[in-house]
Image 1 (cartoon, helix red, strand yellow):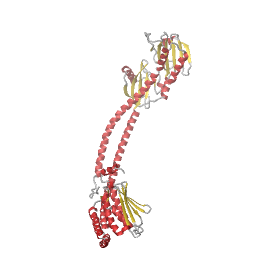
Image 2 (cartoon, rainbow, N blue to C red; image 1 turned 30 degrees about the horizontal axis):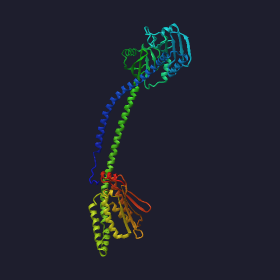
Image 3 (tube, rainbow, N blue to C red; image 1 turned 90 degrees about the vertical axis):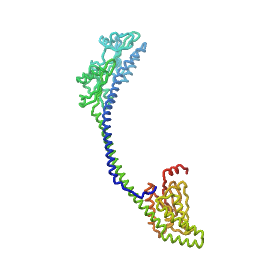
Image 4 (cartoon, rainbow, N blue to C red; image 1 turned 180 degrees about the horizontal axis):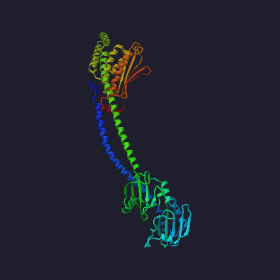
Length: 529
């Protein structure tokens, strides 16, 4: 984690950004071509899914119309004898389950009696006419073993007003024959589909075999035979093939182009055709909306790329300036440390203390000389390094403290309690000694007010604190300059800040400990506290 001494500005960063932007634009163009193909496929998929879903709803609704006859037939077959009251309850329940039903008629062909069941629960009884008997008679040659079977009556009935008549003949084992008829007015069917539409952006037209309109969004066309030759041709082709036919035509109802699918509908022995139409404009709107989102996303991506490029350039310039400033400040700090440690005043005090020691304690004088040489050796050997290990910094500071202890004796005391796990972690070179020196230089030190300095680790931080009794004649600007230089070095290596505070007459400075590499950091994190 050493500061680089040589920094070269990247003048071609804008050129690189422009090249990357061109490559990015080319990639977006290629992606847009793929998106166009996907959009066309989406167009077909949307039409297919919408038409299939609408057709499935229609098929289910019309098949539901045949279920009352099936239920009544099973009831008549399962009951050896039945009452009109029970039959009325069953039929009324069936009518409530399907609001499309106008009425249900049951004709006893053997007794020539007709019962008409209305939605309000009323039952009308009348004698069946010869025309009713003929209309409800089963197909010629109907085997007697059959329990139910179709009649010759077509589903669509134009009189007395257009309606659907779903018929089923029931043969009982006692020889009696019944004809069940479920009737649905086309006007009621139109109201039902209009009020219960779940088709979304499509509409449907149902044609019976001859091309008569059974249901249509335009009520005026219901019950009339279509006159459009293309439509009649598609209906005939769908009935013959039994397969869906797709076409793009102009809708007479909406007056716009539509995608239309003709589906065969097999219903009670007849084959009808359901034509589901999806306005092309609605599908195009879906695809265009997809295109708009894609274009917006592409433009947003380009804008974001440009913004990130500009921010990167500004950040790199800022970091470049900060690194250059940090390198300069590091050199200034190094020179300042040399000046502070080898200034004549410091050397004079040290030599004076040595002179006294030589006369009083020769052994201590020799140790003093060794410590003094160690201090200067560390300054000369390590002063050029921006960072040093905590272990080395503590050793250097203790040598410096020994020299100051000779001078101040019991008026100064320092205690160091650090976690051994952080011995190889780093702090700015001579920063610990500088903070100790600042404490000595800027505080009153007397026998009644000794200076107590405490150094300890708090998590991954080194804390230096001392009792704060500032001297009136001290230059506090020099202390602030030293701290700012330490902060400058930290800004280059980490986002953590140097914290300085004075709390209850205690000066406290917190220096972040820098891991020499990730391996050391993981090793410390894995150890218990």
